[in-house]
Structures are given as structure tokens and as C-alpha cells.
Length: 504
Image 1 (cartoon, rainbow, N blue to C red):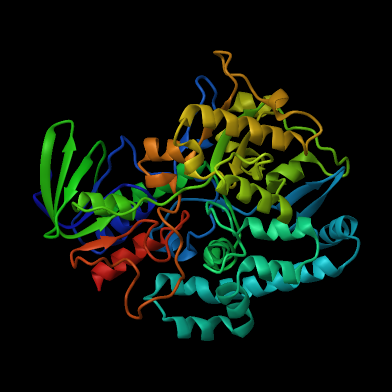
Image 2: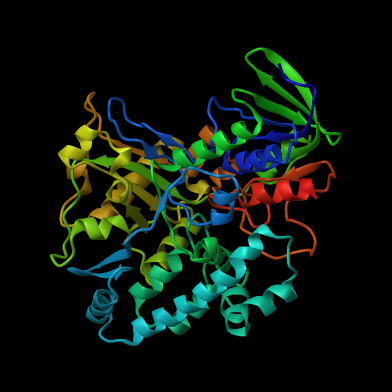
């Protein structure tokens, strides 16, 4: 039986809401989580996407960087995150640039072969040495009350402040690096899930880059063993074990400034009151629930999930496909290629040569595949396409999705020794194991306005001192989702901070 009053009612059972629920319940608070879908996890879920195929795909979000070790330890989460041996591989003609975390000499040789010397590797080490220092300094502050701008500047130092916080990252990269391929590899971290010109003085790309390099103090992008659903599952277990109530199939209809939350489930319409309401929904959704409006942001990615019967062959005979695909495999993401794709998409056209990147979860974590698939040599492949804004899919969602998918697979095939389609597994019903999700699909299926995976544009990790970055104009309503300051990605940071703001 539901109570009529709770100390915290959490709207949305995504990973941030579960983090908040677990912290609050462990502190003895009465907590209710209301989730519209029949399962929790939001976009951090695993799914068997193809009938009869025993592969648990991380259908939406797929890697973990920003989740702090402190949150994992505090909540006793039973989750394993594995570091990838290979950072990235970028095909270049008949060769490619391999960044091997486990072999510095091999990385150096690859840079020399592609760039013709040591200058680019030296610049690479200086740049990522700087970002590593920023990560170590900034990451701990993400779980504390906000620092102001001046304090953040003192913390990171003058060089990093100038190049990451003040100057457009496109200009910085062009200044620090001379090689188009290397420039592109660096800039992709500034464009994941973000439709922006990296040379724009608005610095949106800078904010995106910052969150991609500071995760947990290292910036490492790790593979969750068991898929993303294992992360959300562990969080739900922790919340329930602490006493939180989680109700799925409960669609929130309205939120009142007084703390009343109206929702509908299979039994009809109900209302509960929270001393605090924690909104684990995009700001545009919260505005609607409060009876107002807020412009929807615009997502800009194409997500493609695949199961392969085998890994594709590479043009580069010196690199094993298992090495190339276990890290981030860059596809036509040179500096100039990124700029052309952005210009085409800005003009309302699907890019001629869509930039994208792929990786194979199953190379690091084979547990997501059934035994039969493992023995047959099958693998999962996740593709994330850049510069695919929602505007391209509004008029003809299905037709534009198909056109974007065709162009993206053609782009990928240009850098492989064989078409990736030849490697796709067929499900028992004869269908190819391939699905594509556009921003419009995420808006329709997951309730994300504009299909924006960060809920809205990312913010700087500083602000009004003493606040947590989760406050709204209403005293009893907090924002605990990705749209909060210091939100975005699978981090749990807004959930932690909303809980801390409530606990005082």
C-alpha cells in the first residue's frame, strides 16, 4: 500500500533517480520512485533487441566514465567496470593510428607512421597530460557544493583554464596539432551527443570535451560487465535494499509546487505528496508537469546496434581487428571531415560522409553473449554517429532514418576491407541483427525532448557557491537528472547531489 506522504518523491526511475533514492533511503528517509515504463534504468539498460538472439545489448548508453568510485563504494554497488586496453584506432588509407594503453612504444610507432615524425605524439602527450591534471582536480568537486568561476580557475591553473574554459576548443586543437587525423580524434570528444562547431565562441564543444575527459578523475571510458543494465540493476537493488519504494508503470501527470505529484498506473489515477520532489526528467518535461513550457533541445546522434557473426576485416594487416574494435574505432572523423558534415547537417542535409565511431562491447565483456554465440565467434557492435540533428528526421522519420543508416554504413565501409553488412548475424526469423535509433526515436520511445541524450546543453561545472546545481525556482522541487548542472552521461552525480541538497 502506498503512503499518502513521503519525504521524497522521485519522478523517473533512470539511474540518477535510483542513486538519489538509494542515498536518501539509506539516510532513513521515506522515498517513492515513480517510473513510467515497466522497468527502471532509463537509457542505461540492456536489451535482447533481436528475436531469438541471445545478446544483451546496451541499447542506448553504452560506456561508463563519469560514475564516481565514491558513489559505487557508498552504495555498495555490485558492478564491475573494465578498462579497455586499446583507447582508439583510426583508419587512414591502408594503415591507421592505434593508441594502445598497454604499449607506449607501439603507440609511438603508429603516430610516427601516420604523421611522419614525433611532433604530433609530443603534442598529444602534452594535451592529455593537461586534461589528466584537470580531471584529477575537478572530478572530486563534482560531488561537492558548487565552486564559483574564480575558484574553479584557481583550481585548474592558467593554461588549462585558457585552453579548455575560455578559448574555442577548435582553435586550441588547430594550434596544438598539425595533422588532420589527430585533430579529429581529439575533437570527437567535444562532439559526442553535441551538435556544435568546435570553433564557435559559445564554447558548447568545450563543455562537451570537458565532461568526456574528467570522468572519475581519470577520464577512462570503461565497459560495464553485463551491459548498462547491470549498472541500473545494481542501483535499483541498492535503493530497494535501503527501503525505497519503486513503482513502475506509473506515469506522472503533474507536479505541484506544494509537492503533490499526480500519477496514473494500471489501477487508475492517484496523488501523493513529497516534502521534496526530485525530478529525474529533462527540464522541458518538468516544465510541462508544472503546467508551463520550455523549449525542447535538439539531440544530434544516430545510434546503431548490431550483432556480427564475425569481426570485419581491416585494410591494415598490421592491426588485429580485435585490437581495432575493442577501443573506439573512428570512422571519417578527421578535422576537415567533421567540419564538412557539420556544415551539411546545419543546412538540413544528411552528411554525405557521416562521421561515426564504433566499438565491440563483447571483446572486453563476452558475458553479454550466450554461450552459443561466443563459441561461434559472434560479437556485438555499437555505432555512434555524429552530426545527425533531430531536424533531419522531423518531416519523414522512417525515410530519413533509413537514408542516414545507408549513408553511415557506406561511410564505415569506406574504411574497411569488406562491407560490414557481410558480417551481420541473421536472427532465426531471417532478419539482420541491426537497429538504428535517431533523436526522433529517442523522443518517441524514451520521452527525451528533441532526443537530446544529455537532456539539454551541458553546463560548466561551477556556479553559485553553496548550491548543488540541482535547485529550481521552486523550494520543494529539485532537478536530479542529466539536465542538472554537472549532469550528462551515466554518472549518478545529479542524483547524489540532489540527495545531499535534501539531506542538508
